[in-house]
Length: 267
Image (cartoon, rainbow, N blue to C red; front, side, top):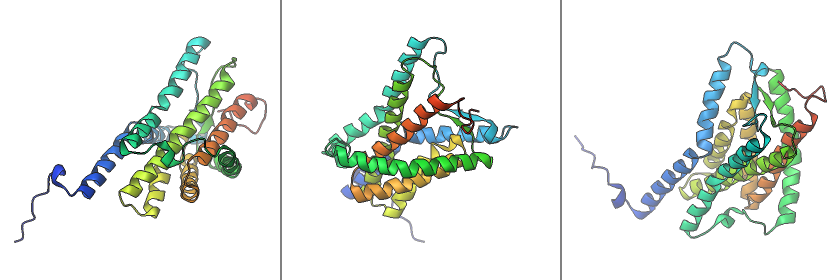
C-alpha cells in the first residue's frame, strides 16, 4: 500500500505555490468584506421573495431608500455615510496593490485618458443600458423579476446629488473590485481567461439576484462583456464611466418620472 507524503506546511511550500495560495486567501477576504458578502445576502433575499405567497413581480426591491423618513438632515448624513463606507473595499484594494509594488493605475483606474474613457463608456452605456432595460421589463412581465424601485429618497434639495453620488460609488466599487482586481488576481493564480470571465460574471450576477432572475442573468451578461472590453482596452475607467451613466440614468430618471408616466412600474 502506498502512503501519501504528509502535506507541506504553508511556509515550506515552493515560493510560487505559496504566493498563489496567499493571493487566493486575499481575494476571498476582499470579496467577503464587499461584493461576495452582498452575493450571499442577495441569495437569501431571493429565496425569501421566491417562497412568499405573492408573485415576484408584485414584490419590490428598493434601492437608495430613506434611512430617516421625515428627518432630511439625518437622512442626508446616513446617505453620505453609506456612500463613503461603500468605497472602503476600493481603498483596501488600492492598499493591497501598493503593497504589491504597484497601484490602482495598473487596473487602468486613473484620469489619464478622460476623453477616450468617457467616450467609450458612453457608447457601452447606450448599448448595455437599453438592452438591460428591455430585459428587466420582459423578465418582470414573465414573473421572474421583482419590481425594482431605484429611488425611495424624499423630494428634497439633496436627492439628485445623492443619487448621482450613489451611482458613482456603485460604479467605482464594482468595476475596481469585480472587474480589475478580481481579473488581476485570478490571472496571477494561473486561471484560464474563460474561467476568469465566467467567475467575474457570476460574482457580478450573484449580488443582483435580490432583483430576481432577470437581475442575475442581465448582470452576468454585462459582466462578461465588461471582462472582454477590459481585456481589450486594459482599463477599468471606461466601464466605470458606463456603469455610472447607467445607474445615474436609472436612479435620477426614476426619481423624476415615477408616478408621471404609465409605463414605469412603481411597485
